[in-house]
Length: 311
View 1: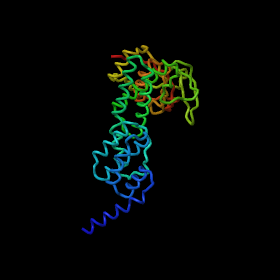
View 2 (view 1 turned 120 degrees about the horizontal axis):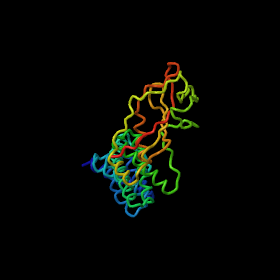
View 3 (view 1 turned 120 degrees about the vertical axis):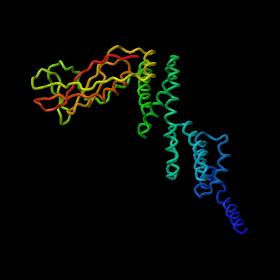
View 4 (view 1 turned 90 degrees about the vertical axis):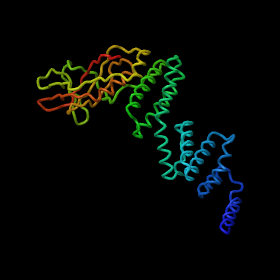
């Protein structure tokens, strides 16, 4: 009985210390003092009719309290709702414990792929209805979420294919709106012209290594293809190309390094932005026997025409 009386005294005497204070600040202070039940009780009533920023803070602290009380499933539901409401909202992570940070990160990593697919679905529907203005903001959100997923190491094969589609659609939408499309390239050598293997032999400097091109010198042997596979189209990309037919051929400018790997790849003549992105991804995996100059492996720049492979 004595213990119960003492607790009652502590709670009752805590009230005046918060008198005149903003209710949200009071709830935060209660949380900081480990009075999780009292903080949660106060927070539940603060969201009604409040401004969006206040509602976000209230729900964030509700999640903190629920997690601290061991009500993990409820906390994760609140965190998921927060992320769905605004995937890019800044959180007061300086006030999170490491365990709560880990919970937020886990929920976000689990949820982001679904958010990307949903944004893409809405954008795709808008494009099929020729409503490009409605599609663009959803594509931008999907692109930003994909960047976050890549940074978190959460991009699987499905998301990698979806990234190609998002970039391609975004390029198409901007092209239709008269905006200059972003240059499609894995890496671009400054001022490098598009050269073919039949051009006169030239040497350009790129840092410490020279880049050769052309075959007019008997001492220069061009690279030999070992593997130049173009994989089958993802079904979603194949469906897109029915709506936005590409050219039948395109040209890639490659720099093949001394080990036969594709070091740089640029689309010199595109077929269609989404397909160009798909082919760039494939070209980075191509393998060659490297070019040689006087028997020594060297970097080599060449142009490769690629026929469009539809389904």
